[in-house]
Each structure stands twice: as structure tokens, then as C-alpha cells.
Length: 337
Image (cartoon, rainbow, N blue to C red; front, side, top):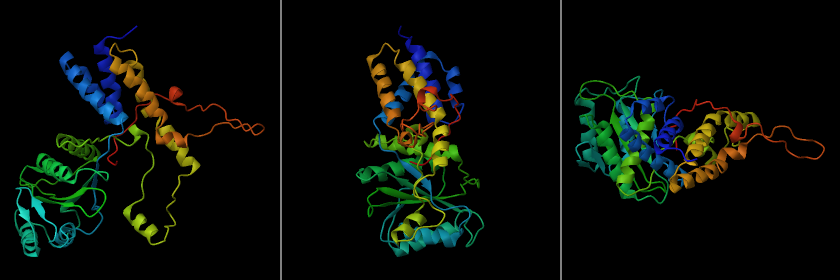
């Protein structure tokens, strides 16, 4: 028997928030009115639909580590890099364009001496270097426009920043440098949830500029592989392989990744179960698509084999199949693509 629409919407929000957001955020749905549940469920359906059709994922990354060299010396070096020493145009928080070595020198002087100032050397970050990227083939102008809108939304409180769009690589990307201290002296201190919010807002701005973009945690898509760091990539390009880096996960790592995926499988299963009992044909179709999506997740390739008969070589049923996994909801958003 079909379930009422309000029940379908509530279940979709309940399990969708567990899947796409931080744990326990779904509890907010209990305080929503019927109209609020309807509107939030429409948003969640759009999120699920983008994920099912594998919409390109945005990448937002802070590239300067807290333990690395800081201060104006490092800031000056990074601004020279993203502007290609003045050959690539920078744009600041006011929309002013900065091009050429002289203009770049004026900018660094202003950052060093203006406002709260930036010391020549520092033991902590004075500027956050943020990379906003999309897969090859994405409209480059749309990426630049979306980065401009994202920066104005997230840092438009009077905080100084500049960004540069790079078109010399396959992946359209923008380098954004934001001063840590705002006009009130408070320092930026982004946490895990802040980085996920940055991803979601950047993807939202891209969609407003006509680019299909999504911002979901890797685990929600069954992606457990972490790509090598740039230093490892450069070493491999030179024909060197770091002794501590392994290109393939061990059996123990595969098994641990599969067990950690249990909460994700549970969320997809409960959403599909509810949608399959909806009166709307679109919901029932989406439930079928969810089953195929989970079955084709990359993590399925690392599914552990439990109990192999040595005589006939037949595999025994896997006790960690998606329909029998623990219903743990301990899933956390990931900020990487």
C-alpha cells in the first residue's frame, strides 16, 4: 500500500541528511512545518537526482598547510605564482583588476602595511590559499564567475582577497587567496563542516551559471580511494616511488573501507524503501535507480570475500552485503571530490 507523501518526504529528509550532511543534522526536520518539509524534500530530491546521474563534483581545497612557511614572504611568493608574475590578471574583493608586475607589487605592499598588516614572517597562516576546481570540459568563464560569486558570498564582509583563473591546465580552476584577519580583527578558522559548506555554495553558484555541479561526500558515492598528494604525483612523474606510498590498498584496508560504508548503505536502502512505496511514479523510478547506483559504487569492487571453499572454489555469500549491513549512521561529510 502506498505511503502518504508527508511520510515519504520526512523519510527522505531523515536519511538524506544522514547521507549528505553531518551526523544528527537530520533532527532539524522534526521542527519543520508541513510546508517546510515539502520544500526541503524537493531540495533533497534534486540533490539525490544529481548524485544518481553522477553530476560532476566540485573540488574545494586549502593548499597551504598550517605547518608550512607563513607570513608576507610566503604570501608574496604565492601571489607571484597564481598571477604568473603579473602575466595573469588578478581580481580583488572590489572587482578591481590587477595586472602587471608594478600592480602586483602595489598589491603586496598594501596587504603588508594596510589594515591589520601582515608580518614578513609568521608562525601561523596569514592568508588562506583556496583552490576551486572542476573537471575538464567545464565552461571556464562559468567557473570564474561562480568563484567570484562564491568569494563575495563567503568572504564579502570587508575581508581582503584576490583570485586568478588558470586556463593552462585541463581542469578549469581558480586560485583564491583570502586574508585570515577580517576588518574586525577576527581570524578565519575553517573546520570540516565549513569546507563542506564551501563546496556546496560553490556548486550552487556554478548551477546558477548554467553548469551542472554537485557537492557530495565521497562516501555517499561509494568512493573510498584517496588520490596521491601532488608531491607523490611529481615523484612518480620523475620515475620515483615513495617507499611509504602504495598504489593499491591492502586487504585489511579494503575490509575496513567496506565496514565503514555500512551507514551509507543503510541510508540509501531506507530512502529507496520509502520511495518505492510512493504514489508518484518519479519516486518509484528513483528508488530503482538508487539500487543500481549502490550496486555500481566503486567500493563494491573492494567487497571482501568471506569463506571460500577450497575444494570447489565457490564463494560463500558475503555477510556484509548492503541488505544486511549494520544500520549505523556514523557517516561524516568529506570535502574532497
